[in-house]
Image 1 (tube, helix red, strand yellow):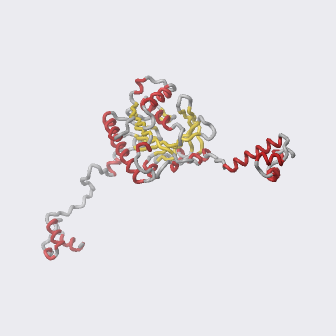
Image 2: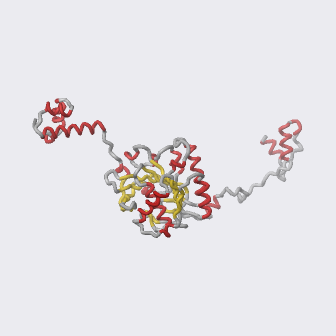
Image 3: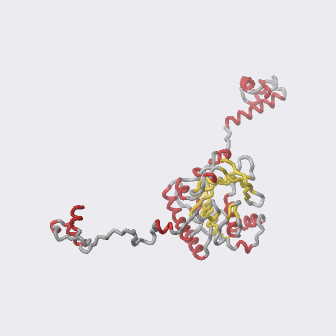
Length: 363
């Protein structure tokens, strides 16, 4: 066909079909009827051609001269897109996100020592877990550490009725733009299987379109998997399929310090545009009595945040050894101790040989 096509095009760029016996071939006959007025386009050396409005050329994109990714919280939180804050229960995830919403809407200059670059000084908080009464109490509690007047909270909006939430958010953002939308929590709004990547991505795509349309950042509160806090902080600790993490431009894992209950670790475990230096150490946060987080200025390597799980069998063995020590110190004999602790008399002798003699008095 390529040879026929070449020979059929005349110098003017129009198809010349006179020399082809098109009537003998129904396919050629159909093509001939459709192509009678067809004109081969001349190559455009400038590559300027009509395009759909949803298509952007590289030339158009480069004309914007963007020198850095626009951010809401510089340099960690982008100005728009989807990000997530995850962690196990009782780490203060909701509290931290309310503090973020307060900082943005009350025109604070920094959040956890990172500069805020808000355009509207407005945030929308979608709450699925706490109702109006709970939020009233929690806001008052946090405001004890802030001291703002009620008027200063005008830019902070809450939505508790989550039916048709995307429609509600669209209407609210169209009427009053916001820098930030917080979804607390993702698992309460998502209907489907968390382990089905296609279902998760389809759900999140709708929020991505909302973010793009209204040029705002959407933050999802999510949970980490069971017992994941015994290992190092990681984007792979999030509950469910990899589809959730993959759609996020940034993921933060909030973790309680293994030894200090008032310390939390703000761990940037994924950041598409962040240097690695931000993503291999936590930012230590102090959590005070007014439920306010403060950046201490200290950082901790992720490896140091592992929790050493005690083996239940070893724990029971240690308890029995301590019992033996106590009873020996009371002057009891081996056979008495064996009977009381529930071990063989020979076990006591083995422990004496294995561990320092100073641990055990003479029988």
